[in-house]
Length: 417
Figure (cartoon, rainbow, N blue to C red):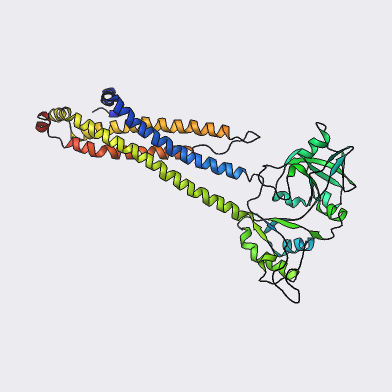
């Protein structure tokens, strides 16, 4: 007996059977096509939307946190509530030593003020001071030159970075590297031009509009002593900032004579919690996409079952004749299932191809300024899984009609009107 896969007559019979009622076959195939496309687009689209959201945090460490100071709310050891206190460089050093899970940590200070070059002035900017460890928290995009480094910090070099907008306003198309700008009556040499990796997260102001200095230089020039305005840090792999919250607060509360119960005096912003919330949201969206997609899928599969049932009913006499001339039950079942599988496969592959095209267009339309695309795409494993599920369900939808066909008795079939 010929293998039905390689039997040309078998394929001709399948084509002829499905072509007898083109409208019915088309509508059933469209149901499968649309169910496959919907499931594939929802799953690929959910990943793409997740990528768009995560791109908003590009350059921002997901394992980072910020520490601030606020007035005390509980009287403690002779101090009244409402007392002001400030973070210091000593706090930064104490946390670096006392919390070994911290990977990188920097104190940060900032001020307002105009930045001038010759007769031009940029008045809307911020002046930010930090150590190179800050790059682990908020990584800038270097446009030209270099970043500030440990030598600038340790040797109190009056070097600076400027934001791209500041550079454009003060220097136009001319390169600012090596030139000097003035801020607070002090001149600083420009060593680099930067911009943020995205415009959606701004800590301390818009990086495009900043003048950035070594922390020690800014504390010295602005007479800040050991004071820092806030502290940013990242943690090592295997740890989260949330796990360190209590220990960090206890160290700072002890150093500044703050009640151990006064959590509000040491505000703590754990960035990883925000990322976990976003991730949890999209996990729910993924489940919703699968649920809606499988609903469309099942509608298409039910259509396959219906058309196979109708085909069996219409071919009762034909099946009876086959049984009468010696066709085995398994041959009848194979024929009906082949028709169901062909219909499901052709429509399913078409649906996946359509979904891949739509996702590719979505990826192009949402490309970033640098041309990078987010994950509006369908993984091969996911595509094959969707197609495999459709094939299994398609065969399942054809089993009941196929069993009915197998049970047709030749005499009854020949007498069927």
